[in-house]
Length: 223
Image (tube, rainbow, N blue to C red):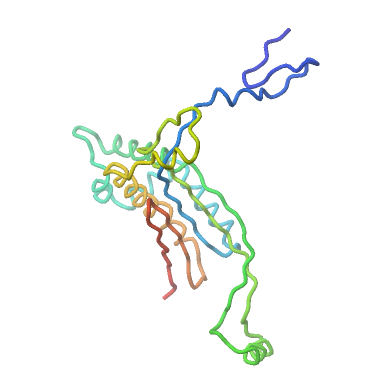
């Protein structure tokens, strides 16, 4: 009888099925800090935004973008080691970016928005007669990144429940604060600038950032 591949097992009838006990072999870890970024865009821009972000998951595109930003700025965040060539430094930056940013998700939400100043029903009806928009249906694309802060990565003890885990969460130290700041700098210079340059024709672009205990909303307004 042929051996069963790892992750599968043989049922009583001899059928090869998924091994439900495999989860018992997993090591559980937790990160008590994450950074979350969420772009809120009209769904019409979803395709171009996806293409732009996908391009940033290739080393050649990342290297080109890093060179566009300029070496001096990155040296401020990540010191170049003694004897390290620029190419070696660039490779180390790419490895760091690979560790921090592994992917993103896109979801769609149906929304309804005012396209003009608050008006009475009579004034709104008059706008409709003149083919002017007042209440508009629009599908919003939510493009979300979740970045675990690796300096808070902790093995989770067997039997530790969520209440115990929350109570055991230490306050952020300098290493955590520095990593959150680094993630912010890398994300804005690589991903945010690329997306903002891609979106054309919109009055505003929104980005929500949740980092540590703080939350921020960034808005790019068309001048």
